[in-house]
Length: 203
Image 1: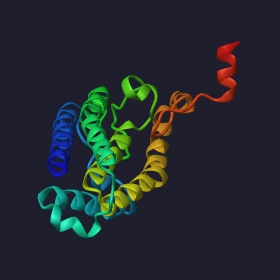
Image 2 (image 1 turned 45 degrees about the vertical axis):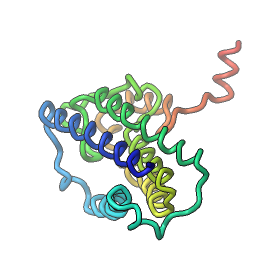
Image 3 (image 1 turned 135 degrees about the vertical axis):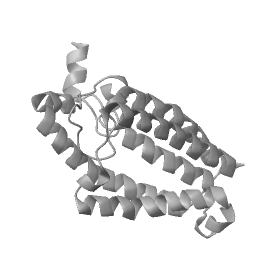
């Protein structure tokens, strides 16, 4: 049963992502992956191949990934189903909000505009959050430490290597506007109010 939920979540998310990205390329063009630094391209492949490979292998034939299974209570596996089902509308919301600004790289398009509405009101990189959540949900449904481990590696790579480079380009493009936006939002999750801001709200 969990295999079929994982398959539905994977196909649903990739279908929505593919359609919205195709529309963005048609409306705003695309930056080729080859424009990125070689080390970043290699890093993406290093993480993406085992991550996607493990997820696809599980939904195609769960027994092929049985060697990496571990015990999880049913409620935790069902929480993976719930998380995965939430990812599909989240991806649609995120990519619809971005519109033609969707980029396949950390680089910004010539006509790129700063988006601060929708999920971007609270989080600067919600698409990365949704991507990590997708594979975490599949890992929980599959009760598979290999997929979960690579999802965590992807999270570290995004946080330490991808986001800093992407934000450097955004700062170069938007300057102080992006700097102010960054101060009020979280990177992958909404920023918790600081103690000082909570005091000022109560005053």
